[in-house]
Image (cartoon, rainbow, N blue to C red; front, side):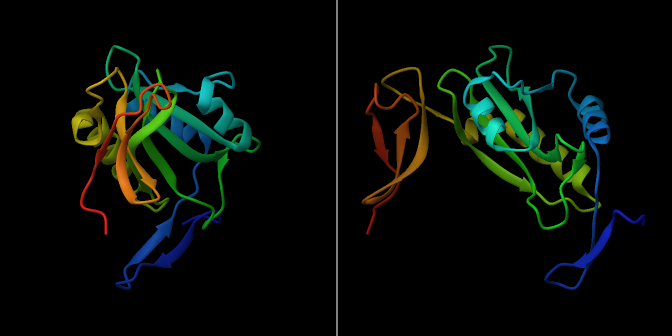
Amino acid sequence: MNADDFMDTDDSGNDKQYKRFNKREFEDFLTDHWVDWNRVKPNEGVLSQTLSFSTEYIYKIPVSSTNRLYVVIFSTIDHRTNKARDKGKDAIRTVLYDNKTKSIIGGRKKTLRINTWKDNLKRKVDDLLQNTEEYVTECDECNGFMVEREGQYGKFLGCTNYPDCRNTKQLHANK
């Protein structure tokens, strides 16, 4: 263990070692597993708006050749230092992103920055890439996707093309 690593325990008392990593290690990991990843550039729509409020590098991997859906990875690597943030300052986040509607459409998953982060992140990204249909419901009225929303009467599915498309579907009986 080096000076940048920290020891912690989980709820069951098992040791978890926090791993600090840098931009190069993270990008090498991406290259080892997905050849078509890219770092989000500052002018890329909604993601660039997130990037302008964030100090972390954001990466994307296309789900298919259409360049509509991406798995987006929020790395926790600070672009000012090229190192991951300190322990307790957030986890690596992965989401499905619709490039056409510029919206996150599901698959929100976090990966703790512990000694198994590489295996855990690979499994989560691969799941999003291979099982997209579990996270995405196409709108039957337009070319958008139905995503979970919360309204005054509870959770429902709403189209990502709102307000142009007002299609909704009830998720379950709201009480």
